[in-house]
Amino acid sequence: MIYQRVALIGLGLIASSMAHAMRANGLAGEIVGYAKSPETRAVAKELFCDRVTESAAEAVRGADLVVLAVPVGVMGEIAAEIGQHLAPGATVTDVGSVKQAVVDAVTPHLPAGVHFIPGHPMAGTEYSGPRSGFATLFQNRWWLLTPPEGCDPEALARLRQLIEGMGAKVDLLDVGHHDLVVAVVSHVPHAIAYTMVGVADHMRRVSQSEVIKYSAAGFRDFTRIAASDPVMWRDVFLTNKDAVLDILGRFAEELFVLQRAIRMGDGEHLHAYFTRTRAIRRGIIEAGQGLACAWRPRPGRRTSTARPVRW
Ligand code: NAP
Image 1: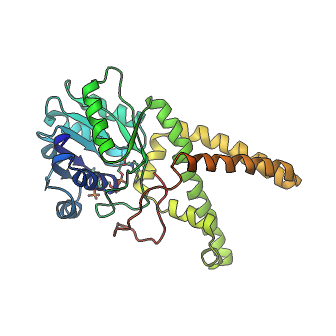
Image 2: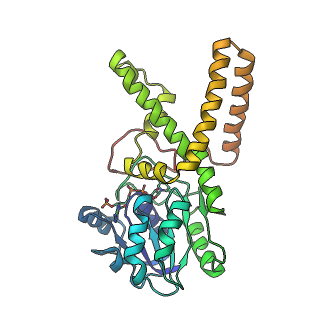
Image 3: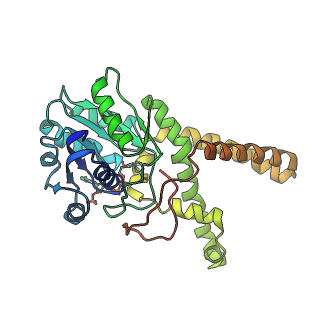
């Protein structure tokens, strides 16, 4: 056992997957949970929490690890509520998809003697809610940590042990660099998927059911990504604005070059470009990151027959 008592604040996909993984691997003595709605708390109690509480403040009392697993936009509000109730020496981490905004919102509320180690598991599905989690979600996935300067090495080593115990691989990153990297590998691809599905939605008004009927793999993948939780993604774009706008600008430039090559019939350019991008995909497969996770369907909040491949 690595932590005696883990408090999970927010009991959706990521928190429930953590609870299942901690239980499966005997990593936590007690798992205490809190989420906004009584319905979510009841499901969590039934499926993966030893105990649920009526408030976040109550959940963190006596916990040696507190995990903030709520949408990025509410991290600060939760930190303000729990700050005075944290046990001395406790570690607080989060799983938010953006790091600078979380660091800015959470840090001012934490008392001295509490170790704050922000984190981001690079694993996920388009499902959400307390029924969507599964123990193998983090298997062989990266879990990025952005420890602040002067972070306690023992607290960091212990958190790392927990994450590795859940099957993930840990890397340490600077906060700003994290936000730029995830803008490239996750946030902008989501923005593109949302846009493409929006385009098809307009088209549907013209061609009715063809878009759905003949939906091929490329478009189906876009619709799966675009089925992701709207609250989570609203918060991601609002809080990682600079990095996302920077990468979207670069994307637009590339798109213009591609558009021009198509217009000019420049087959040589297209072939060379697609050869380069194919090599990137091969590199991802060789790095063992070609498939998202060992998928096990669970009745999440949304229903879909698609398989998960994103974070
Ligand atoms: P989720 O399944 O939608 O769950 C969110 C949880 O937060 C729910 O239990 C919700 O409670 C709770 N919550 C929301 N507002 C709250 C509040 N004010 N007070 C208390 N609880 C509140 O979300 P998730 O996918 O697990 O994402 C959680 C975090 O992980 C986000 O910051 C996200 O950026 C990050 N993340 C997500 C993924 C992914 O692919 N999903 C991957 C990596 C990181 P109710 O059910 O009662 O509303």
